[in-house]
Image 1: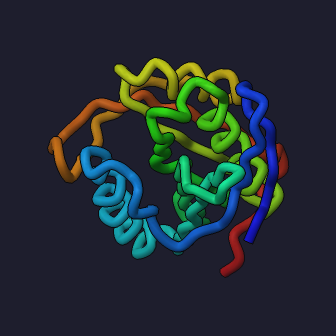
Image 2: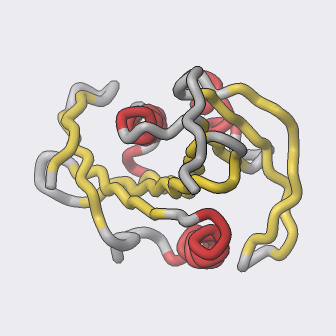
Length: 173
């Protein structure tokens, strides 16, 4: 199902669709994102009553050129519902035309429209593009954290956040 259409910096039209899995054309070298999503998703589902949403970006010939996910929960932040922007992958030949930035903005809008209050994103300190896109999309850098990565073990991540709604909802008991 098509959720949004946008024009990239190269003048071509792309569409964002909801999906259920990481597309098969994503490089095997980037499969660690899948493993991390599975690991964190299972943990978040248990702890935070979490829901996972995946999105594919398609070009004009309906080829999948990018993927992104978001995890949304309601128990991690006191008196508010939160979302975590998870891994994003843009195929190399489609990089530097604004697709990654569009995916971040889309997921932030998705969370805000669904009534979530906070959004969080992590990115490798070495990934200058992701870090710059996070700031361009209004996320605020709050520091670095150590996380477990299924392929590399413990890794360092830059942390970003944004408040989507100023009013907080009381948790329902």
